[in-house]
Length: 267
Length: 285
Image 1: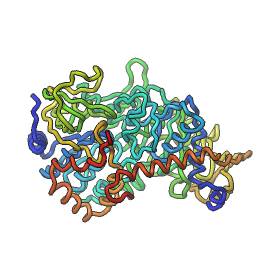
Image 2: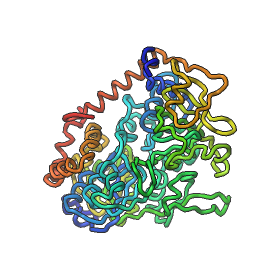
Image 3: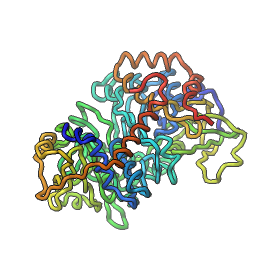
């Protein structure tokens, strides 16, 4: 989006910063790798210094100086309050109800917050075999709420996902309740163009705020379902200087660290 | 009794064609040297179990050694897809493989049940998830006290588990620290366990009392292989070689380039080469 670039930040930076703002210092956040990890650490380095970040490798209360490439980079353990075994992570901490926010990314997402990271095409004969769920199926149902962040595209935001890796609101409405799932599920979606919240009754994601310079048409053009907009549409506040500097410094440190171990070249 | 053996012998004595085997390491302490030794010895028809198959299973699958994989995340963490595993699943190359897919919670619970000697694990999982429909090993049980419907998956009981760890003492007790992942459960769930370590020390007398130590009598064989988890890492010894994970994405994308890499770095190499691969990853003291 050239409009946002003219403002001195990119759509992806706006996405990460908007996502970071949703987190609070008293949150206990189970961090998915990729976009969620950047947002969670920007939150920790700006307005939410006491946030507890948990990665599925068992690192609880971690404070990495650079973004980890994997969920199990050594620095996560070195800076954590404690590191537990993986069965304990999933049994006591996640299943035990200790996580306030599960923060997930998505390869494919539908309007009810259901996520596919497993296959494109048929499961038995996939067109593309994706990595799969990892911790996500239980993060999506055992965290008290789920936040999702992803860049918009017609391939990514689809009417019907190919596989239910993690359950959001299913077919919408009270589908979670009907399955006996007592957590709130997806309550927030942050994309590179907008902030979305589920409709209280239908649970369909609805745009509640457009990022600066973004039009309704742009949101619709990059989304595979017919987009609903809230009647009172906000404009997301632009990134502050501190937010931008924090994110860019973090990404620069990360890039240097991950290529620093290269003998020859890195991608 | 645990035996200290050269890796070549430890693998030959404990792994056999057709075995169900786990090479575990949750990002940390991945037993790469042991997996490469298995590739050199050319085992066939293995059932490969691992939460995060990662590069070593991509390599073993690419060499046609696997009949089946049991996993919960078949990706290159932080980088993307595992391209040899994809080629096998999507195109049956170099052979078709059976897939049993779980979530991390499912695998972690199943290993724990294996270590606990239970037939299955019971937990709250796979709710609304598509895996419950495509994996016949995801079933449900009803809690006899509350009536809640819970998930059950069969325990994991490998014929043999391979892990990497920091160190052994002279008696063969093994210390695992840092991100301990599923190392303890994977060893205790298996009929036999083989551990590669960075070094052997005289004793563990001054260790903190609650550290994860696997007693010598839970382990069949120990091999000393400094650097043996590269490009994964060993907490306290060397860092993860993130650049190598990024590079793997390109190597594995091409069948011929993959074969050439395996020939040079595995077939024509040995366990002794690992120490040199981590030299640039050791932190300045």
